[in-house]
Length: 317
Image (tube, rainbow, N blue to C red; front, side, top):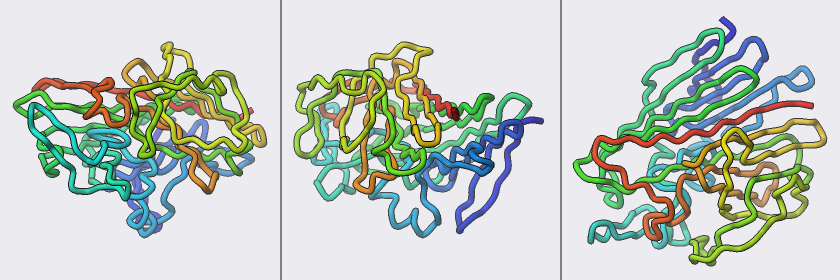
């Protein structure tokens, strides 16, 4: 078979590997740590080249995960909930774990273990499905649901990440989804070119909570150098299925990351860390603080599911 799946350990991390033997493309996942994406590699100049800014060891992961959230699954909400509180069906709910600014941040599953539900490889792809059953563990989210994440490494260096949420509660639940991957294409990001299908971003207050206003920003509707531009912003995507929603390119080595999605991920959050060696490009189903502002918040009835998809394609000039 052209594709294969195996397990391996490195630096006390237990990884699940999807491999395309024909092209050398490889994906590595950490099931026991939030189903994190640890690697998406392709050959470059005869060596494996990983575009995912990851945690090199278990020690790094345990120390940094709940501050950086690199590659975290953002569930049941993305980004921030103002003051860690929201009202649902006349009940005031509050998350006890908060970021230093007082917000609840990036959901509840980033540091949770996912079980391997199934895996399959043939001549055309390798797929693994990971599942976490959330059972009302946090008083801020007293609902029950299942989060399934399916990674599929396809031909032509394409990685599909599909997330399905199933409401196991007896009432309709508020829920949203997102990803928090950091990408590095080699060298400082200042030299990268960025393009995405939006000229509008949400206006934020000082705590990165939407104010209800939008800001016109057409700077990256065509490919343009990042330069010294700093991001911690959420853009409203204009999505055309089959057309990339975002493109990131390093002109120095010709590596290009192309991202595709559909209408269920209508937001793109972009963040540039101070070290400027990677950039977070996050597909979101709902706006930050969606439990309060309701912007594209999903109200999922009992026993219903909702599924989100994003595709990443790597190429080298």
